[in-house]
Length: 262
Image (cartoon, rainbow, N blue to C red; front, side, top):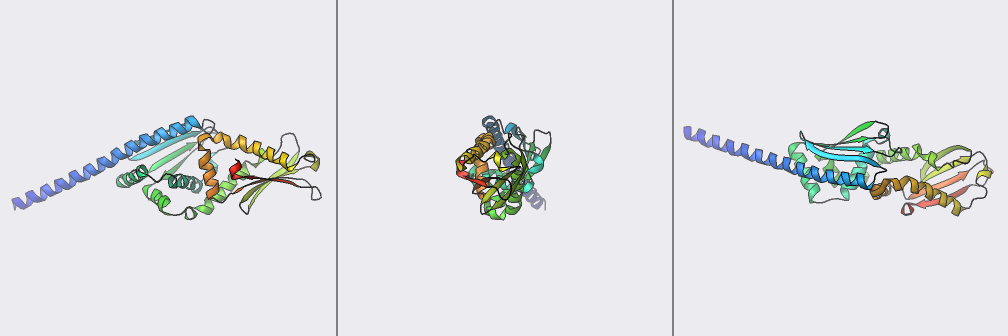
């Protein structure tokens, strides 16, 4: 009987040691990968100072914490919904399917450790987004069209609409700026009080104006610019139209800016 108890105790001890070793290994992996994430986000902040004021990552208490302070007033966290954030992350994940990602996700699953990304905008508002191992695996396996595609696109278009006023010239009286999406192109329609404000312009002039606005807007993204363009494409945005209009009887001026132009 003592021999049986001794064998059972030894087996149990071995199981506990094995479990502890596995747990420690996962923790070591997460600590190491968090250091890599910290280097990546810190570099992103350094390369894109007009978008990111500061960024850091660390692993503690079975949680990977990523804290990002934004510096661009065009981004407010109340317009960055969970579906939009997750879709942006999914685009990045699918572009970085490597061993580090696999090891990180496996270790997150082993420790039941989430990744909490907290964004803070220039208005002092913060919002936390939770990424679990299960969510990462879903991003890896499923096509983008099955990852909150419609919700993410709606939220992206809400963001476009919220900042549409930047396409209104400062030296002209504008009634309003309306937006819509059709056939892969997102339209910014600037309606003037009278056509005289743009009567002397050509399509080439209008495109130059559009490109100037897009340059001011998207050059602020710095090193993150390719990631945003990738997301636009994934959400079916092939380009933009800038349209000047006035009354129904007045001539409408329209130009096209493709994604590749910005």
